[in-house]
Length: 323
Image (cartoon, rainbow, N blue to C red; front, side, top):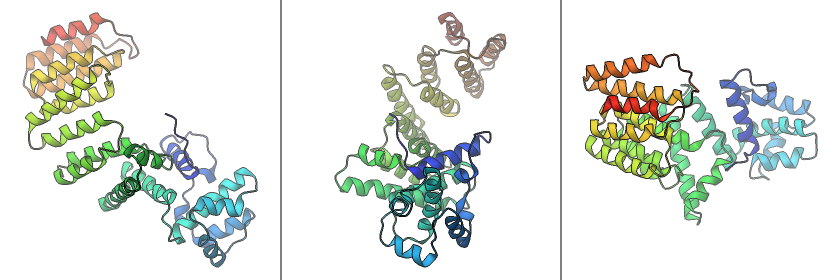
């Protein structure tokens, strides 16, 4: 489903896209970091755009509105759209600094900012992202108390966020599990599970978390996930689980999942990924002969292009090696 982003989320998306793809064609004002601009410079720039405000007048205005969007509509609603957007971004930053109103767009902008810092290793300490996630959970829960469904409460936030919130939560919780913070990871999984759409991905998080104390219980969860995937496979998830099993997976279950996953492979790139995972898995089990056989099989395919469309005979040879 296409999600139409609110203005600040859209500009955050442009900014983040430009960061990861410097060749992305944007104007300077669309991606600049106004958080580092001095207060006087912000008011001076507003004046240059035709909006003559000082701090005293600005503070009076923000007491009359509930959000920077309302403020922008009030002060710049009838002018050229590009100038209006420039004014909006500056007003948003001033509103963020001086308003006591904690509206949804301000909260989500801060969450986007902290997610970006987390993803780019720019956070000064983990407490910043932990607090943001705790506030996120409180907002979601308060919407449930108001009578919204879990799905609707979650969707209401998404249009204010540039980041894919579900993907971030999955990656963040996965990192927490990798850091062996069992209690915090459990609380996050348990707290956000009712809200997310990608339940099987979060079931995988449950399996990862369970593996910290019981590999057997973890494997049971993984088996249930793959039972659910039979009718509607998800190759990305299946490959992610197989990579996880390299370090802790049980041999028979790994072989079963490889067979099930192989039947859904379409391209050579995916096949080679499975082969490399299998090499790593059997290396852990000290199956030197099998590891070497798979490595030789992979080497023979080195000249095959990544976008080559697989035939059944291709992975039939691989499965024969494993049998």
